[in-house]
Length: 236
Image 1: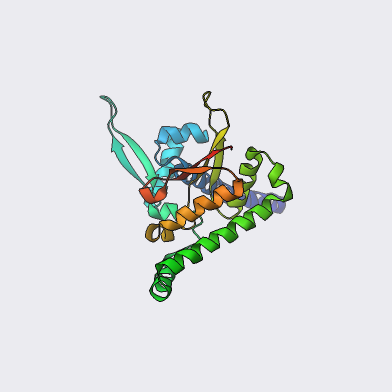
Image 2: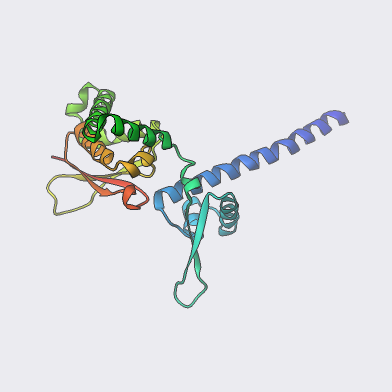
């Protein structure tokens, strides 16, 4: 009778650390994603957002900083102790999908040397046109009759499936006659390319406007040092 008891105890003991480890990893990923979205936050902000004690959050933050995924700066608020502001390092941002790397930049450099800048620009433009057609086909035949909110949600789903951290929301403005929305992406699959060839972002902007069939304006741009790319989408 003792053997089953011993075995059960051992199994229970072995399973607990694994479960706790999974929970810790999930929490750390939640912290990284929240930092990706917000740019900079305090430990208290994270504790409230994730519904975790400040002590536990600080332990996770210390681990993430040791791993080189985040860093902190000090900010003096009033007469009290300075508070720490946390943000992602480049390594932390690289934890999120980033499909292009230095190879793509070098490849474009080679194409420019071979074909010339105008020819390469035309090739990139055609690539984004193909991307727009692909997205339109995924929106379905009913896209022309869909409301803009439906198109935005479907487009967000498509981009998330590609690895983007994407969200959108309506702009509340009593003075506007037509609805407006903000479409936001917190990571960029063409970040390395955009740094050397910012014009590709213009093609992406045209692609969004084509897919949504309405005016789209850039409001935030990672190339300018911001932590997200944002687009104002206006219903025509």
